[in-house]
Structure formats: C-alpha cells, structure tokens
Length: 115
Length: 115
Image 1 (cartoon, helix red, strand yellow):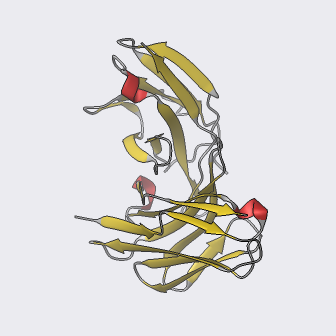
Image 2 (cartoon, rainbow over the protein chains, first blue to last red):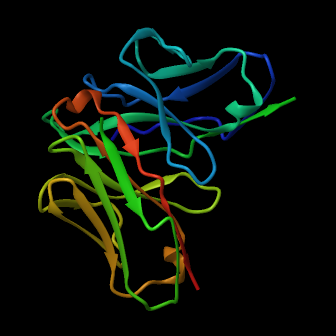
C-alpha cells in the first residue's frame, strides 16, 4: 500500500518560491506521482504529474529523485491566490500490477501565502 | 471535452432520512468513478470506487452505499443518515485505460449537513 506523508502546513510570502515535499517510501514500480490543489468548497484540481526526474508545466515543477521515494512540488513566485491545500497522490496497485483504480489521498499540506 | 456533473450543491437532511447523490460524466467512456468525502478541515476520504458497471469497491464500512447503473453514472445512497455523515462529498472520474497514469477530475461537490 503506497502511502504518502506531507507537512501539515507551510507559510510563504508573495513572490517567493515554495517547495512542498512528499514522502512515498513504498511507491510501486509503475506508480506515477500526481499533485492536486484544492480551494475551500471546491474539488481538487490536477496540477502536475511525473514518474521520474523533473517535470515542468506552466504552473509548477515536480522533482523526483532516482529512488522515487519522495517528490517535491515547486511553485515559483507564489501569489495570494496560491493559498490552498496541496495533495500528493500515488496510485495503489495489487501484487500483479493491475490497478484497481484505488486512488487514496493523504491529509495534504495547507499552504498560506502572506502579503 | 469531458465534463462531470454532481448535484445537488448543498443539502440539509434530518437524521434518519435517506440520501441520494448523483454524479454523471460526459464526453468519455468506461471511466473509473469515485466518491470521496471530506470532513471540515480534513483530507479526502475515499468511500467507493468503480472500474465498471455494477463493479463497486467499498473502502469504508458504514451506512453508505454506491451504485453504478450506467457506464457514466455513479450514485451515492443511504437509507438512514447519521450525524457523522455530514461533510463535503465529491465525485470524481479518471481515464481507465492508462491505469498507471490516472488523473482525477472532480465534480463541484455536495455540502451535506445532517441535523
């Protein structure tokens, strides 16, 4: 069972770069790592997904070391609107490598961006 | 493009009353479907997921049930609501054929208050 561990909360200021790390020691060979953002009273929104090394899109970057036991979401130059909860998600598969479609969220990291 | 519809947006129900929340997905076929619940200030709890019509996996034994009568329809039900059923209920879908690369797309959620 692939579980994730993230810091409960983080604080930052506008214009700074924010790095949120997720630990997933039991990640399976075929698992991808996916990050979501959630605002109050809304469903989570996909941010970025990766398998290894580095992935970058228009919103964020995702750094994954060679052992894949952790990953870091990097948000460049955050603004007040980036205040949200960020979830790291790793797929859960049976021993045969076939997905049951079971995607379990951890508690997430509450990011607060201050003026 | 794919869209997900979830209703109602808010619901206030007395203890002991029945519940039916409906979710439909458009623009895709054979999706994985999910029901999550989020208590105030907490992370997302996976309740049910389905990889096909009539195939329901339950993660939390409780008084809730789920059904998938059609490929793109997912229903969450209860015969008698408890106070502890209050929360923010989210329906989600993911692409089925690339199991290792699943991305979740969430509905707008239902805020349920059981009084």
